[in-house]
Amino acid sequence: MTDRTGAAVTIRFDDTSPIGAYTIGFDDGAPVGKAEFMDSPVQRGERIFFHTEVDEEFGGRGLAGLLVREALADSIRRNLTLVPVCPLFARHLKAHGDEFVAAGGAFRRANRDDVALVTRVARARRDGT
Image 1 (tube, rainbow, N blue to C red):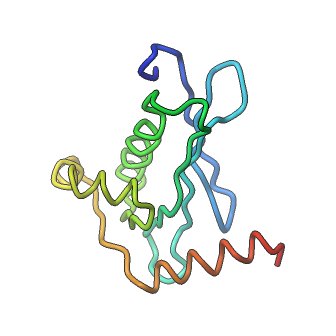
Image 2: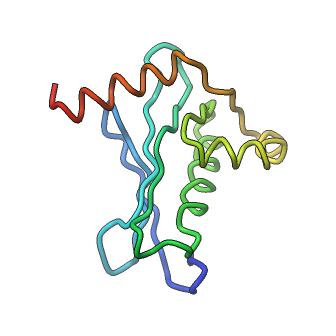
């Protein structure tokens, strides 16, 4: 896989609980971006994506898009329903949701409970509790 400049990139999957991530980096170094998620503790088979970022110095290279596309493809392989709290995922599914579903994917819109859950878990992680 390559970015817009032709540089080789690698996407890795980290399913650390409660917050996992798909990370992206160049073959010669540490990750420079991530798409964070948590698996719903309430609804089995749902993966909630809530935060995507790429280091500023690597902006404009299409890395966030590569992360989104890999996360979507992996959710199809794992038979998961994607819940986009992250605005990047929500925009992508608004524009390409029909294609995602046609390829075998499933998603639903995020609701207040999803946002509250993600906020609670992220605060606990930040506070070390």
